[in-house]
View (cartoon, helix red, strand yellow):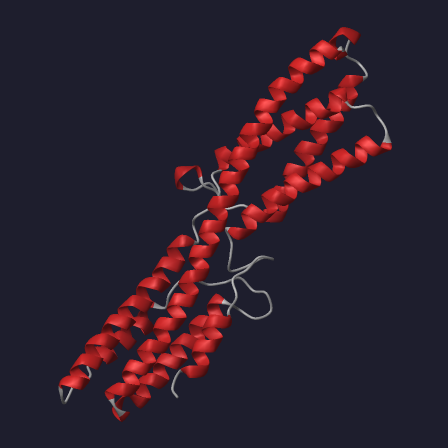
Amino acid sequence: MLGEGGRVKMNPLETSAVVFACTFGGAMVGVALHNVLPENHLSSESKDVVKMGMGLVATMTALVLGLLVSSAKTSYDAQSNEVTDMAAKIVVLDRALAHYGPETKELRGRVRQVVADAAYRIFPEGGGAADLKPDASRGGALLDAIQQLEPKDEQQKGMKAFAVSMALSVTQERWLMYEQQVVQVSLPMLVIVVFWLSMLFLSFGIYAPWNGTVTTALLAAALAVSGAIFLILEMYVPFGGLIHISNAPLKAALEFLGK
């Protein structure tokens, strides 16, 4: 489905398969053209000109692929850091409520339950799809319960204000994680990169001799570039797929809550 700004949600495996078909298919088309082109088209002079042109295309492709990898890694690291940061803030929230006094015992239990439910939805067992949408009703009820605390002294007043601040910060992190899941690869940029790669493989096939070694080398190269696209797309879906964010920070936070 195409979204705003030319961004589209793509299946990493299916997209990388298309990239492989385009690149290796381009090489095979080049091999077929090698057998039908006139001899002067395959001369060393023609080959030198093609090599210079494709060298420029290869440089541009490498630069754009580098940008795509860097962007995907930045997005992945940002969301991974958000999970860790949220887990730390949840523990600090629980500690603040504990320091407030024993009257927050029930409230701390509710915090633990909300966090456990969120952890299950973000990191479902059995490989299910992650649900990053925050439970606004439960989160809002929890915040209201913290705000309804009635401090008896200055210490409790300070702990209450700090707990409210932490609860709001955790809520902000949750909504940020939800909004960031729509960040995807720019479809026009990906199409251009695949077109450049197909041109490169076409040129490889035109001037390559037809034998098993060349075919294997072209096959391995096509697998390599399609694998690179697969990794890029996988890093844009960090809560599912093969390259996923660890749930260890939230699990560690749950062990501390209520104690």
